[in-house]
Image (cartoon, rainbow, N blue to C red; front, side, top):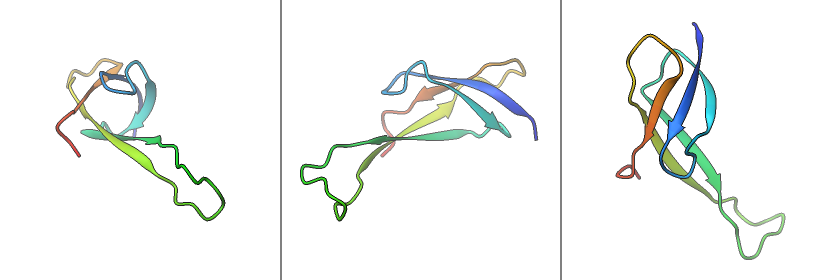
Length: 71
């Protein structure tokens, strides 16, 4: 499969450039959250953001837009 450049627009990862394989329709971005009692036994907490492909043209970079309605 071919690797392609992609750019994320909107949301917390706006402007982030990534390389994707296979033109996935959705990308998930995990953003770490601070935990008050951070020690070795504390759970790791991340916020999950969803980006959906908005460009279907054959040229690069592919574009993915922030989906604010996704959990």
